[in-house]
Length: 197
Image (cartoon, rainbow, N blue to C red; front, side):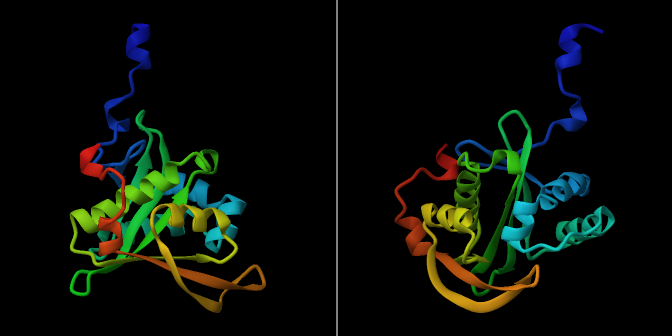
C-alpha cells in the first residue's frame, strides 16, 4: 500500500453534507454518532450550560435512535470542511401548522469560541426560514450562559423573556432566557444565506 492510499480517508468515514454555512457543513445525525455526542455531553462546561444530566452511552444511543425517527425534528452533525465532527445542531419541536420550532446546539469543547457555533446557527435558521415554512424559531438557555446568549444575539435572536427559577441543576435553581427569531427579522439580516455561499 502506498503512502497516498494510507492517507486517504476510508469511504465509510466520508459524510455526505446536506446543508452548509460559511465555515461548516451539516450531515444528518446517525446512530453511529452517539459516541461522539456522549463525549461532548460529558464535558462539565457543556453539562452545566445546557443543564444535561450525565447518561450512560447506551441511554444516549436510545435517545439518538428516537431523534432520528422523530418526524418533528431535524438533527445534524456539524462538520468542518475536512469532515471533522465538531457539534450537534437540531431544529426540534417543529409545528408546521403554526410555523414554529426550537433550536438546539452543542459544540465540541475544543471548537468553542471560534465562530463555528454562530455559523452553524445561521445555517440552521436559513434552513428553517428558507426551506421550511417556519415563522418563529425559539431558543432557550440559562440566563448565565453568556456564550450561548452572545451567539444567539449575533444570529439575530431577541430575548423576549425570562422563565424564573425554571430549571434545577446541581442543586441550584436557574432562570431560563427565552429568545426568538421571526421570519421578518431573518429577512432583514444583512448576511449571505446558506444557498448563496
